[in-house]
Image: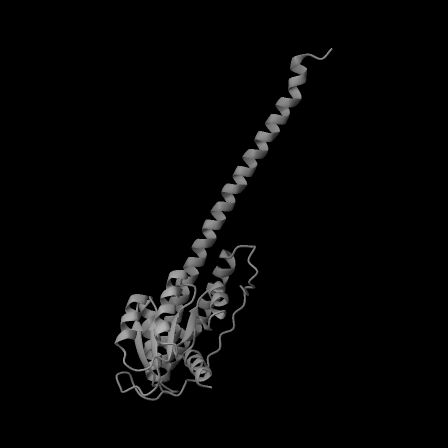
Amino acid sequence: MMTASDDAAPRRRELEDTRTQIAELERELAETRSLVSLGRLTLSIAHDFRNVMAVITGQSELVLESVSADGPLRRRLQAIRKATGWGERLTRELLAAGRAPSSSAPIAGGRVSVTTSPAANVNGARGGAATGPTVLVLEEEAGVRELIVDILELHEFCALPARDHGEAERVSAAHAGPLALVITAAGSGAGAARRLDILRAARPETRVLYLSSRLEDARLARTAGATLAKPFTVEGLVRKVREVLGAATG
């Protein structure tokens, strides 16, 4: 004859099994949340590190252009330039580590190709009268902004720096001549995109070149304009600017 206690035993075991499963799921959920937070932090660090690498890469190339081929500093500068390649590889590995598994964007985490191109032909000097088109450089990172301005002015563009959209709007309003191009960061959010649209509405002839440090930024920017990945070389930036301006006049 089955007693009430005999009938309750399977139910108690089932209840214990359910509690064990719930505890295991809660532990897995906590681990997943920790990994997601770590991934976001890693992507943020990689993004900032790419800005640093962009400055080091560009400034070392600018100095290389001013050093003679047999100068005593050239070898050291070339070593710095090579080290930026290692830094870019580390950045890609950070991006690969921090990316969510569901992302469809391919990352070559273990491989990077660094090309040191011949020095671009530099005409004119900073502070001289720029004769080329006017470019508004909208970049919040001071080092990256100053680097882009230096490169553009050395290649006879007129560069107008702005650290945020408010300053960009004031600079644009104060500039009497045409504004050929705006260089700005990709993936800056809907608010930044709306303010850029307002600026361009007042200057419909103005083109946009987006700087991206993440693949997500590049995909977003491709739908709206030209894109240049960070870190960029001096020649790469100048070539891309001329390419965008050529498409506007072609």
